[in-house]
Image (cartoon, rainbow, N blue to C red; front, side, top):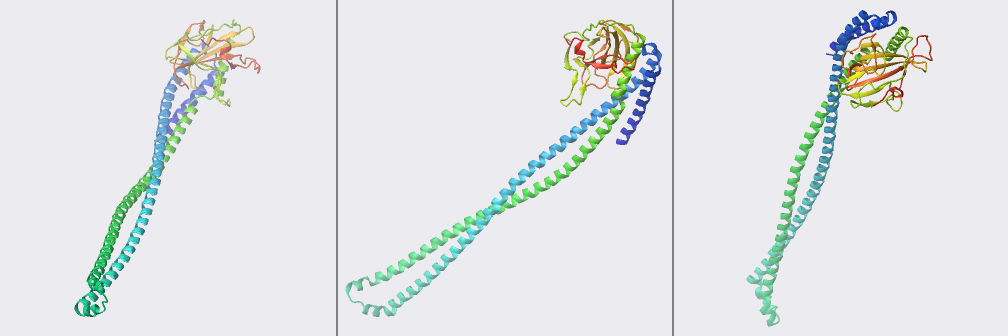
Length: 424
């Protein structure tokens, strides 16, 4: 597609250069536009063909700008998703670390309980063995040694309490043994709870690890998509630049345009050198039908971009009127940015300077012709958006002086229209 666009623009550039050369030849060699109607009409036909091509080029440029904007938006969206995913992965890693730490502590607690249970089992074992030995001894006393034991009794109380003492000893051993068994059961219950908790943590850890794996995979996929989006953005920007370069090359540059207008003003002065002008200008649009959208002066703080006229924003089709009496020097299309425009030569004012007004971006071919004399208030065209324009408006310029005698001091230049022409 890129080669096709380039090829189409190369053909367009060739057409533009041919048109430009023809314009310059006519300017330098032909009689004034108003005296060479046939040549102007022939040029107008070629320029109208070029206008259609330029519109197509600008439409293509607008489409490329949209493609670039869409690619940039996709890239920013992917960057946002990756950023969010990285934050989620970070939170997930913290959760995994917390669970694994709890798992480690729980495992240690289980091991501690297992140690306590082992000690308790030893206590139970030792107590059981002691109990067995005492029971055996008591049995022996009942069976064979009872008489020997009784022989050692020194009083009646000892004789009466002998059996009770033996029973108390047996009961105490049984009580302690049961206590040990209860304590062991409690330890085992705690251990079981810890093991259940451990199992839950292991399951949670497995789920979190699985989520982490899925997020890492998604992050990698988004990374690939982001890389592709970056390439798309680069390609879209390159295509946009290529078309922008072609559109810029299709339009006359400032110097050529300035020379063309200077030549037209010089031709008018040469043909109407005796035309005097009283200096009275009227507003080019009817009051209430417009607003001033841009004044004469720098467009930026550093002054690199300059606006050489006054813009009257108005609805498409709003009538445009001659600001003062004079001869129409040019009426037609210009590919240097003005689109459809009219240039009117008003003659010499009392200050010794000649004045001309230029009306640009008209909706359609002007309703006056080169060489025609118009009076102030005569309709010359309609507000439009042709040429290098953004939105319907009239771009009005006021040119002062000419260069008939190659005088640098009196060289035609654009001055602030607000000095002479009403802004409302």
